[in-house]
Image 1: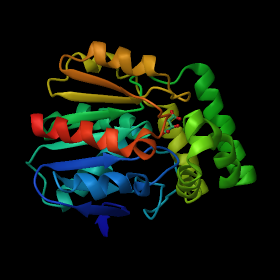
Image 2: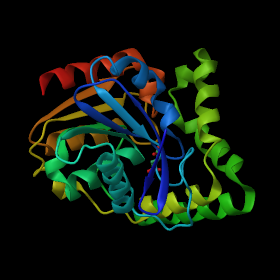
Image 3: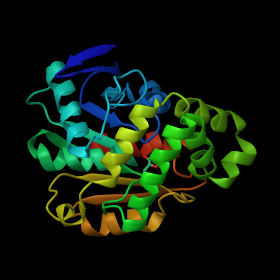
Image 4: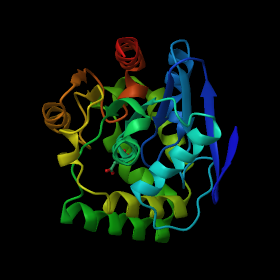
Length: 264
Ligand code: MLT
């Protein structure tokens, strides 16, 4: 499905009824990464999964983007779906978590709860910012494949690479769909995102913090620090999962989300 937002044609999937659950994908992925969640959680919620600006089937206008802009896009999509006053559960993985925190900061009254998966609250270090610039230059010079080749070896747990070739192939296929302007615009959004650490203590909604125990891209210590700073958090480290824990361990991931939804 597609929704015409201010200045952006946004692709999204929607399945199920009841409590709205907005799922925000990571970089350089797309809503396709949420297929195991759309299939399973739509029995318990109205699952809405957009392709964020610059990803998948959504427009990829020239950047730079910002996390606030990506959060505003999500708010505009909810408006289009008639969810102007109903609070939604906002779940984000990695970059989607950065956007979820921006959404919570900008629209706290629209948030029923948060799911922060494989993400961190802090801003980029100067070294990480320099790496964003290098990645943008690589994408422009060599195309999407160079980004996928550099990132794929860090996205999954060691056991997923050896035992689950179909998950590796799916992750590669999803990443291969990100267009270069979207990659470059999104790298700028991540590079300039604010430090959300101070915001955590003021989040009154319940938060489910999920992290792969074997995540090498963002270490589990980030999730532990986030959960400690939140007034109402449940932290779960999922075994045998790396950065893409929802794809690697969908049964455990979905069970935690279902329990969280039922608790609201
Ligand atoms: C992601 O998975 O969304 C990104 O790798 C996060 C990041 O680069 O900070």
